[in-house]
Image (tube, rainbow, N blue to C red; front, side, top):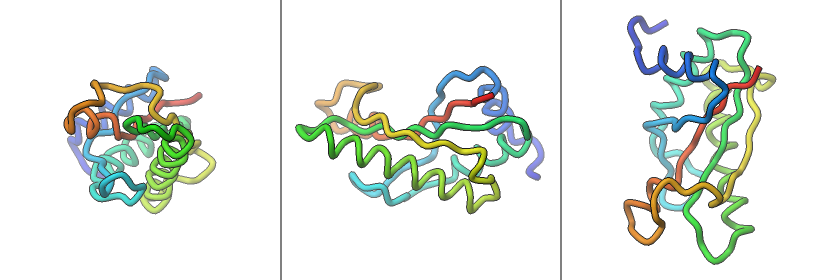
Length: 128
């Protein structure tokens, strides 16, 4: 295990609160479900390994387009890609649920590139 990984420690605590939180350092290639950067998922895996009784819901979020059905599919694909990566990192499938949230919960206004990027994200929620 990595000693002194404060992000993983913080996330382990957040998992216990059952509140959704942003999984940082995860990004996707353009508007696809292909992971481009996934170091945040390694931190999340460490957090989960340190909290063995906790299960997790991975939620994919996207920036809104005119096609909400496609937005929903993309957000689900992003959540699934993140869940697959967590499994690769040793987290059993039985501990992971996935959910696509489409564009329902934007973090920033969608009309700037920065806003759209912020709205394309993975969040995690601890489950009992």
